[in-house]
Image 1 (tube, rainbow over the protein chains, first blue to last red):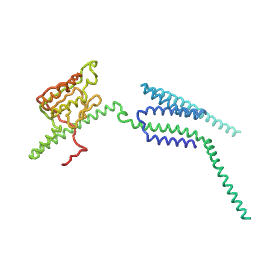
Image 2: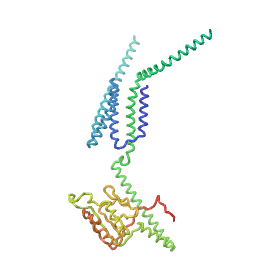
Image 3: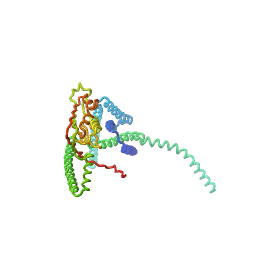
Image 4: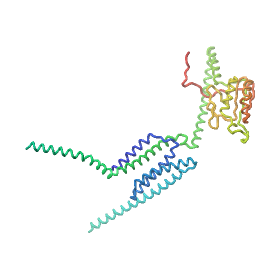
Length: 131
Length: 275
């Protein structure tokens, strides 16, 4: 409960701070790639959480590190006149999809287990009633 | 007996109160630590920082993208072409309407001038002023200049830039003609007024806000001899053009007509100072 409140609070701060800011158009490409890196890290975090191997340090370092590398790639690409940022975009989006598929599988397995368990419980109840 | 008991109670309370206060501070600290560890507040604040970064950047980016999607970027080429044709049609219609209105005004003027000599002289004055400010077609002795970009092979030319006729060239010619006493000048049918701007807009030149392109046809009314020699003077404009192969041709004419300015003139901010 506490955690959700804290996170919502930070999200609210972000919303307020972001509302009043307009990124210069030249920088917007960097920001877009950073956003993609953030979303990718979040999906990775959700997968790790589902596998019960979530580590905050790994998550945070990935969250900010990935964004930083993506920004550096965009910068380098602009200097060399090659759209290297496309590499970041492709990697992040493919990882996003693969992570989503993992999430899907785990969630489906869990729901299937639940259904099976509830059926078993019902059958057991009926058996005990019969006896 | 009663007094003793009361005093003892008071003493007990005093001692009780005093000791726990000191303990409370340490306990509170420990409790807070426990609370933070149990609820994982540190982790959540760190996560919150990440969320803050994401939301902040996301909202800022949304703001920018929605702001920078101006009319031109949001529309496709086809839509822009549609807009252009629609505007052109509208422009033509407005031009026709303007012509009609001007005819009506002219009619009123002629009717009025028939009525009395005072009005007659006033309308004469109006005509004179209109001619001076460039709102009447004018004819008379003058010169016609034709200007075109150079045909010189690129390897021969000093630079490709200098082979073209620029806005600065046109301005220089207009200034030269005015200094030689030109009474009316037009470039490709655009009358040069006191408020005329000649400027470079990408690949074309704008005169009076209308696009003109090479070949240029410049008409100037005035003393033809003076006008021609002002351009032909040694080290003058014609010499400069011939160096780069820009084609310039000047002919004297007995009678040329310089057409009027077909835009709108008027003040929006300026007011006449009464003397």
